[in-house]
Structure formats: C-alpha cells, structure tokens
Image (cartoon, rainbow, N blue to C red; front, side, top):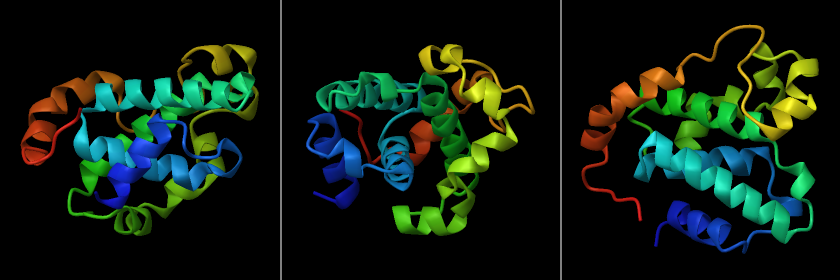
Length: 154
C-alpha cells in the first residue's frame, strides 16, 4: 500500500493522533483524497473523518467546517493546475503556500473565519472568492475521471 493510501486508511480509522495531526498533514490528506476521489467525495470523506477524529480525541469543538471546506477547495484548485505532481512532496513543493496556515486569510478576514458561524457551517469568503468556485468543480468531473482512470475511490 502506498503512503497516501496508508494515511487515508489510518485517518479514517482514527489511528492518527489528533494532537500530532497538523496543517501540513491535512493538506497531504486532501491531496491523497483528490488523487483517488472526485472533489465532492473527497470533501465529504474529509469532513466526516475530521468530525470523527475530533470526537474520538474528545475535542469535537475543534472541528471547523469553513476551514475544512475552504482548504479542500484551495487544494482542489492546486491539483487541477498541477496534474504532473505524482507524490505529495512534489505537490507541496509546487504549492508551498498551501502549507502556510495564514494563506486562507487572503480570502477571509480573521473575524469572519473565526466566527461561530464559520466554525459550524460553510461561509463564503469576505475578502475575495476562492480561485476554484464549487460550481466549477462539478464541471471538471469528466477531466478528473479521466486523470484517475487507473485509480479508484472506495
């Protein structure tokens, strides 16, 4: 099993320590999902997995809906523009900005992002739109399916 599939397996089984699962690990996980699943499925699995992991760690209140979705969509945009990245390290080198936690503040004011509303449900950015709107993600499905023709999402 390749390292990305191991990460997905361990994450979904809550076999990763929430306390040592940092931002870069989240981005690697998103990349791993997007390599094997369509965006909507990757986003669903990540959301459910993070909710399960935070609950397992007794820290359900740490789950943040808007951050989860926004980072997934930013990573989906990066995957779409760098199809040649075949390993998570290569992807991270090409898109190092994704590893900077404050990069999301290009799109959201700190006040909006840290609001109770944003933690509980998806809220749109207030500074500028994300580069890859959700409405366009669905239009890319046939391209995504072609790229992943040899991969499968359980």
